Image 1 (cartoon, helix red, strand yellow):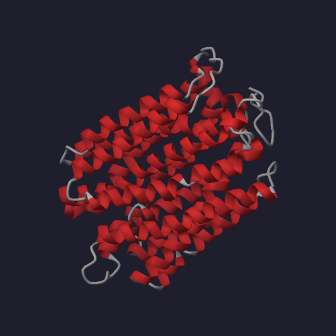
Image 2 (cartoon, rainbow, N blue to C red):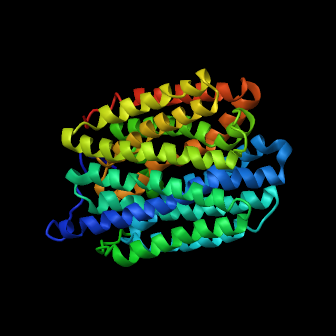
Image 3 (cartoon, one colour):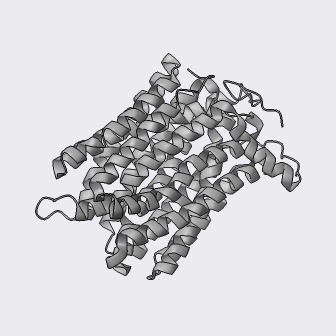
Length: 415
């Protein structure tokens, strides 16, 4: 397949119809993304570590790494497949609604189990269903938002991480003694958001893609990575996400085993304090980074600088392994990661190889988010166990983020 090198997707839009609905569509997208991150962070930062510590306290670090790593395989597989299928059907809404309702069912199962095997199965089902939902939601921006508004749209959508993440961690922390209820509440939030987006998003029908032979589908799927700029965007995001989740995925255990907390402050309560600090900073940098990247038309600058900053701030808890040090780290890390994710999302939509395959190619790119989450728990577990504990984990996470910043440099078609 011949790939077309473009700065912006060339999907045909209906300019006379799109602008009046952009505000409502962006609001629904922000809600959909917020619900997604509420579930991901509520489970990843609080519920899953607590559940595993209850079931297997002696091996909690290794067990959390195994469960997170195995389940992330399902995220990696289901995201691009669901994206390609929604491209073929010409609709996003059925996949959004179906994924959201299936995620609720998976959360009901996950909250009712009490063995490592069943927890692993439950979270694999959760990752699979949530990535069906995520793939279709992610494709809405390149489908329906004009290129000139991608930075602003990505910033609003990017607010889903700080807003949803904070809400999810607060809900999980409040309900941590009632795991089944906590899982059900987070699943219900996703299901309701899916229903609202599909009901009020008013998706225009696109022509369905004809079925193609399996070999041609696989070749087309992999061909996205042969595109120079797309490949480097993939590498940069993969390194940044690997560095970020290697540390953040073990935050509860860092607070339990590495940081001396103030008297009377439990680790879940500490997470509930640090998360709003991080997410509040993330919200600020998400909006500022997205809007300024539109105004200045400089995506690479914002992405590269924020990734480098994310790496450098890992030195804070190394120099000051204390509760105040963790607060400072959380704020600076939130600033860096929020700007990166907002502007990197806009950058990626501008280097997609083919606009008509936006969901499939965004699904391939999302492997750069899901794939490192397979590696991150194993990397973190090995570093903690064999290379010097949690201090070494911060050093490794910082190095990976800096390499992610350097990977942005070779991109040519976007400033």
